[in-house]
Length: 316
Ligand code: GDP
Ligand code: MG
Image (tube, rainbow, N blue to C red; front, side):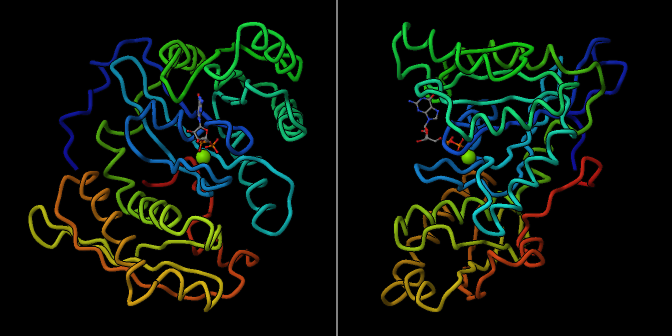
């Protein structure tokens, strides 16, 4: 890895700040949109559908004065089946790891039971500063904003609050400044370019999954996982990627492949274009569709599918 982007410790300002920021909130409040706005890259899947962000994604924002390591946790929701429980656990475990917690809510609506549940969870980790992000402020008038904001404020003890529109980019600079201000003084943990280097493989899988969900819409809702089996730079500027799309049933496999392979081709072409843009390289993408019955219910296989929680010290 190139290291030109890395400041040697003496070059960092003495008050350089760094740390982990856990982004928490129920599904659909705008966590992924917020992450993408900060990181300027399509690293978390944004979708109208709930729960597309199942993996815990590290996005690293490196500035001269700070390094912010974002953790995009799945929304906490009622444990309906195993995957639900796993997601709740993931979110819970992400909380103590973080230096700062961003509790994202959709201020265009009143707090839901899920918001209250999450606020309750956060109450047990009061040692960490919690920033209340009142998102989707573009959707309501000042009067409703005031009353809704008051209702969210009452859910906990917040170190700061920001009314934002992740979609339109409103007040995000202020939010970021607030996040940085609450991070401890510390060094850069990752080189500047790390964001792509560490995650290329994983991002490729996310982009494929995002395109598959888009192409399939209602047809194969969430029973879909993508694992990148091979990721090789075969020549300068040419990357070969082989990935498996896992579904739960034979009938879903047929849908993903489509008539004469047309659906899979469409997914592959769209994903390839996105991966090429991300890598700035030509990509050969080979996709396979495989059936793993009931994978959503099996803990062991969840790990294999990459839902395992990376530890803070993980070599990335
Ligand atoms: P997540 O489930 O919390 O990650 O939510 P997403 O980031 O996937 O966003 C869910 C939906 O809300 C998407 O359709 C976004 O475009 C939309 N959204 C996110 N932030 C805003 C916002 O500030 N204003 C409006 N109007 N829509 C937003
Ligand atoms: Mg999301």
